[in-house]
Length: 438
Ligand code: B12
Ligand code: SF4
Image (tube, rainbow, N blue to C red; front, side):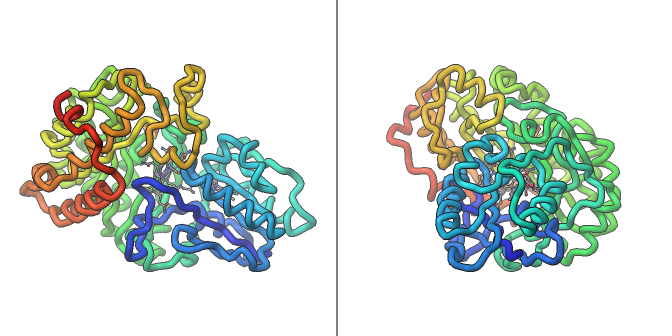
């Protein structure tokens, strides 16, 4: 069969293509699906963030993945392909949470991981057509002998980091807003370390990015992995919980293995707010020392914060901006609390009648779609804009990133990228003094 796999686009701060046609780091969703397809099939990957897909070609099957914020674009393209007589399959996080909705735009919906189902679906499609409309993966896959993503099918020059991979899936924690635990349960699975090392060795290039949800969730596994990465001489980044900063051996190995930066979900500087989202393992009174420990080892911190939790009042924006500057969190990333379908947060907010906007395009973590507890939805939106713009003003950037340890060029470059986006995507709020003085 001739199969087309399509990467959709979305609005919002992250995941966009720059003016020069560059994307950040490559997702491995479609490249993994391509690798899972038996060799008799021809697979083409198209990035619809750059151009329209070819609706007229003689595709035997068109496949889409999609986060919630990307799903309106997926549905629009899927409808056009189906009108042109091409069968459509949709999978990924949003379709897994709301398969009946996705079914209205697809011939086949896949719920959960594709590793075992995709080859079966392709065989059925090649042999008379699918036997089901909704395929559900009932058991989590074993992470041994994983398909190696077909990176050769991507535009090699388009991504800042083409070499992305996963060593683990899932997370043992259970934060209320997180889509990962709904999708993977609270399971945490890992690949054999030797197989991860082998994947890296076989691919040219020394810059890597782990797409794991929390690479250090099981410290013993992470330490074994980091030790095995040391001889490879690569540099990389990963998402990691702040619990890492309480384990000196783990941090030492992270840095020695080439871990140059870490995406860390601080989420809030209020213990009450953290309790409200079931993230009690984050301890704000330790954050300063946690950051210091990571910086001492040369690890650049991309620190994520969420606005709009039940404990947050109008002062949360100013307090957070002051905190990231004082703590010198290198690249702060702000999100608006968003009830993604399928999460515990969605169920709670829905039951309380607090979701006012169900346009999925707005579920990009940059739009307020809820009624917060201690401010209005408009105040949440404008406070977010104020905080992003304030954080990426030049004096604030310099206050955070200038320190004696090496790596300042990387910190400056990344800060400038976010500064450009901050001023592009976040308009000045009409009432800045409200946030400055609260
Ligand atoms: C890389 C990544 C990004 C990159 C994307 C780069 C790009 N080129 O687009 C960046 C950093 C830009 C990003 C941004 C965002 N992301 Co993101 N991101 C991820 C991450 C870490 C990895 C994705 C990946 O490659 N996974 C590995 C592949 C193999 O797994 P998979 O995608 O789940 O695919 C498997 C199955 O789902 C299934 N499947 C998936 N699609 C399909 C399709 C078909 C046809 C079939 C059969 C099967 C199938 O089969 C695959 C193999 O088993 C995931 C978390 C994660 N662990 O997956 C979050 C994740 C996808 N992101 C998420 C979110 C919310 C966002 C943001 C909205 C917010 C934010 N601040 O992070 C932005 C918005 C981006 C945008 N487009 O506007 C959520 C999505 C939840 C949801 N319901 O929408 C996730 C799950 C993280 C989370 N903690 O909840 N992200
Ligand atoms: S620690 Fe991160 S990945 Fe794990 S449940 Fe919480 S938000 Fe999700």
